[in-house]
Structures are given as C-alpha cells and as structure tokens.
Length: 342
Image 1 (cartoon, one colour):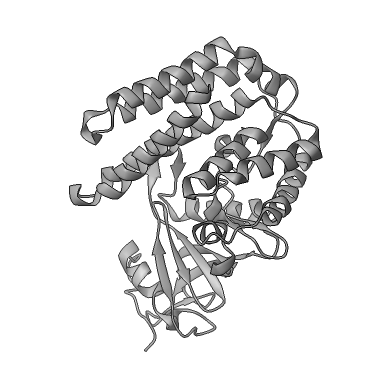
Image 2 (tube, helix red, strand yellow):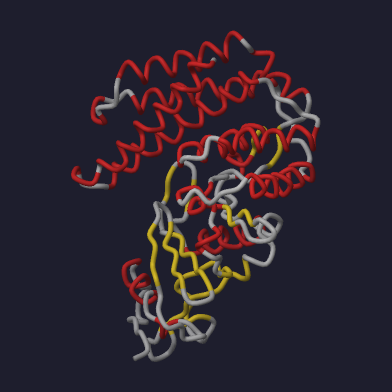
C-alpha cells in the first residue's frame, strides 16, 4: 500500500520518518529500507541509495529549523562533497505529498521535505569497519593520504592573524574545560584539570609553533569532520560528509585535521595510522610540523570529542547516559596520553 500523510498540514518529523521507512515511498521500490538516526539527521538506506534527512533543529552553530534552511543546507552538502566524494552525492530530492495524500519522491504535490540522495557505499570497505576488524593496511592509508594531500593543495590559504588563531584555541580550551568539569557528568576532576592546564600552557609558552602555521599560509577550507566513519576505501578512496552547516568549522590547519583523523583512528584501535599518514603528507608537501604541534592538536581534538559526547546526554534520559560518559572518559584518557608527551 502506498504510504499516506495528511496533505492538509505539514507532516511532523515522526510522520516523515515513518513514510521514509516504507519501500513504497521510493521510485525504485527497494526490497527494504534501513533507518539510522544521528544527532542531527536520519539516514535511510535502500538497496542502491542512501537518503539523508536533516532534523528540524536549531543550535548556536547551525539552523535547520525551516524547510528553506534544510533545502539550502542539502544543496550545500551536495556542492561541497563533489571534490572528495565524486559520483557519490547525486542530487537533492523533494519528498512530496500528492493530491490523494500519498508520499513519494519527485512526484506531484506539495514539497514537505528535502533530502540528499547518495550512492550507497559498501559497508565492508568503510574505514571504521576495517579498523575494528583489523583489516586496514598501510597501503590503504597511503592511498587515502594522496587524496587528502591533493585536496589540501588545491585549496587556497585562508588569511588569519596569528593572535586570532591562538585566541580561538584559548576560547575553545576554556569552553571544553567548563563543560567537562560539570559535576553532573562525574568525570575525573583531576584529569580534566590537568589536561586543560597543559593545553593552555602549551598555547602560552610555545606561540611560535602556532604563529608559523598562519604565517606560512597553512590554514585552508578543509573537510571539517574528517573521521574514519566518513571514509570508504574503494579503489579510489572516498571521503564524504564534508561539513556544510558552518563554514567556520571547515577553516583549519590541514595538519590539525589530519591530527584529528589520526586521533580518531587511534581511538578505534589503529594508532599506526598517524605515522603512515604524516610520513606521506610530509613527503608530498615538504611541511614537517613539529611533534608538539601535532600532540596539541590531537589532545585538543580529543577534548572536543569528549565535550560533544557529554552534550549528547542533554536530550537523553539518565539510563542512556552511560554510553556517552564512557566515550567522554575514553577521549579524556587519550588526551592525557598526548599531553604527557607535551
């Protein structure tokens, strides 16, 4: 039976999700549909495609609250991901409610939602899966490094003053410490204090290693959320889910982005990725960032991930907090390991 909605009013998110779980909503009538919920979206997997729906949410750093805003962000996501994921992001498609109340893609009737349509990538070649199954090879990392280095080289430098660059880290360190120190999360207070004091001290005592990054034009418009779950190691590595909703989050030192990626790989169980990745990066670019800079970036990014982990609890009942508090603790321990080197 064709899924239906009340065409007299805009369907609620729950109604749209229910419609998109039904194979009859899709033009190619897939055998089944799998739905995955994330913090800011729903992803629907059919036999051949993936469709991403953005939740109607609004935070300080993004606004998906209106249909027009979600359409704009869908189109930005399509545009931004063409370089690192060619042939993966296919179109922005409307979910419409027809005259008889039936829901369908690209049919007739009122547009009630916009989704990004993508080619479905092979789950067995996803980088996080390869790390967890201990199947990742050095050759895979080298191929990925070539793709990323080419991407960074093609991006023109973004002008930024050295003082401004250091100030943004000082603000971020303070924000992370403020959240992670909250008694409601029960994280080890001494660990939170030690890690953030070391980061602040590094920033204050070694300003030259940060100033050099801006003076040499190393700040670019990068990916913005380079994590193992956003990499598929096909014959030509695909890097997808480039962050679209806030350009400022994409303005990064390429070495910070690679450090973040290496930290996430270590978090999943592949610490060897860091050395392979940076050997390839330095050989290709001639940029040999000092060890303390990489350790700072990795520790800081681990603290950012710890903060984001605990903030997931805001929308959850207390029994569901354990997963996120455990993740935050793991990231803090990882940050401590990098701070010990600092």
